[in-house]
Image (cartoon, rainbow, N blue to C red; front, side, top):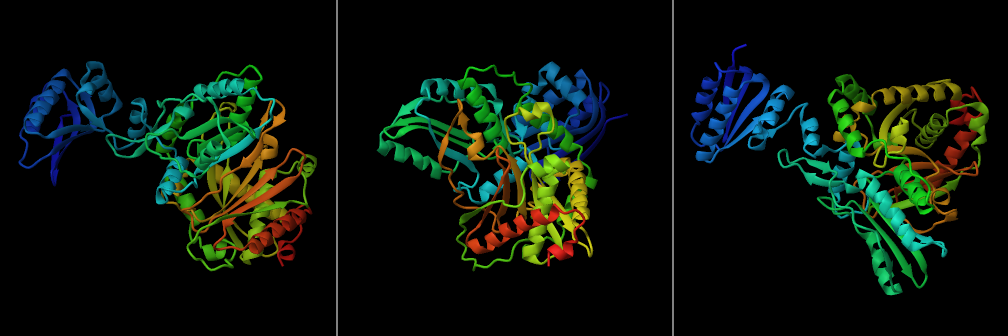
Length: 528
């Protein structure tokens, strides 16, 4: 195929689209085209996305084009070369002085190869949300804990430093990509050594003010860990930016590995890195189907806070305030799932959705189900943010039974999981930013998770979110405790909902869980 050349000027940018082969015959024509630079041009973009082959003569033409551009103070860039052409640039060293940029399907892969990794869809959503309220602590996941007096602090510091150096997520830093300007992540940051500090009560009080500070995102460490000895005792303070660590990673992985290292137990070698996971996922996302994007748009079409969230019973004064209601579940224990073989996650999600239908009076519920997204043995050991939020939409029809509704929810969950690789559409456009979210947590409560050498770490403070970018926030967290019971925690906007309104939802949730244990009970009866 002969080389085809088309040109277009947009302002100060001269774009030259190339298609075909740049062989010995085509090279002189290319050189002639690229060295005749029109007036007032500041940038030449050579679009290589349709170039299948380049010979040495073609490389010489590019070299001459670059020299001519530099003489006239014009920037020349190569855009979207195919992998076969990119390999020629790499082998010949042309990649060292040619500026190569990617905007299409090769962008993420090439960026990762150069140490720039894209944000995962959920990471991008969190970071974008953070920038709405940059001075907020809403993305901090921190806790201050008091240690048992018997803890060897130097040994604990050694254990923590071992964890930090073993996982690349702790070297993660957010940066602006030099070519695209997009926020991306690199895994080449330094890991600051954790040391034991002796502090006076006054200095300790000042240090605790760290709990009130948001993370500075760009090119900064995205965690902070302190070990402190004061006249009152021994303390650990850990704080992670949510876009790098989720609750499972913190409670089940970080503290567990810290405890194992402290006790001198053997640590299984990390099978892969978080950076590898990000790179592989980005390849799959590039292949995300329009069918998946359409699915999520349909799931969230017509979402209305007045229909799909509890009715507000307080005047919105614009002063967002994180508030919580904690409710001990009375009507179900974990034995029910062991004895019946019922899917615990689907059952609890169905209960949360029926409770929403009860308090809203609506027959349609849209709720975001938080899924931990660790689906393989390798991922179960992987530090980092792995969760996804899957919007689930369920409609309650006349004469539907509890069994039928549970089956419908399970089907919706499975269909949503099949489209999980297309969730970038949801996060990118913040389609479900105001939905109520539901999560079932196991062994991530303070009673069960924060253990060191068999002794509990007494949590003194878990800082609340000071400002939220979400105006209608309602997070529904159900925690399965080691004794077989459950605790429901509702986190909500106290400027919009009263404690009494949230308690009504909690009571409804308990009632729904009891009613659902009777198969084929009519929903119209229990929702009346």
